[in-house]
Length: 135
Image 1 (cartoon, rainbow, N blue to C red):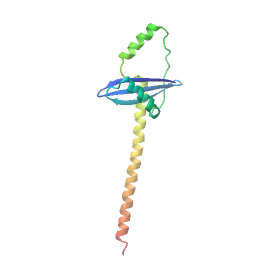
Image 2: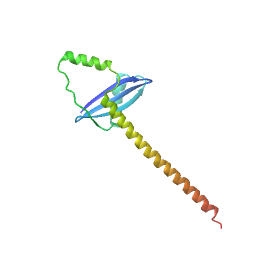
Image 3: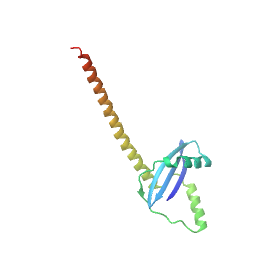
Image 4: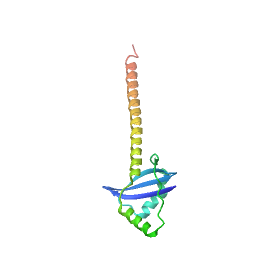
């Protein structure tokens, strides 16, 4: 299992994207930090809250072999530092998670709305019964 954390500034907040690779599948979780986090704050966040993160559904992703050449590694590290944001697969996974959350929210709000309507109906019926109780 591989885990990568990318922290970048997404105006007006600092955002962290956790990318988890397992068996050739990529899962992503996005966290908003607010103000620019220090290294020790990020580390503390990971230690305290990692088990609470909700990752997106897994997406197929190809596993890249790390280069053995130290100069190439240094060059790639420089490219990654210059690159802000997340990869395309990560964006797809985040989009899937957002759609899934939207569907769950719609179902939940519909159930709440129906329950509230049923409660109001029962209150009206009870009031009606109480008005005619003495007759």
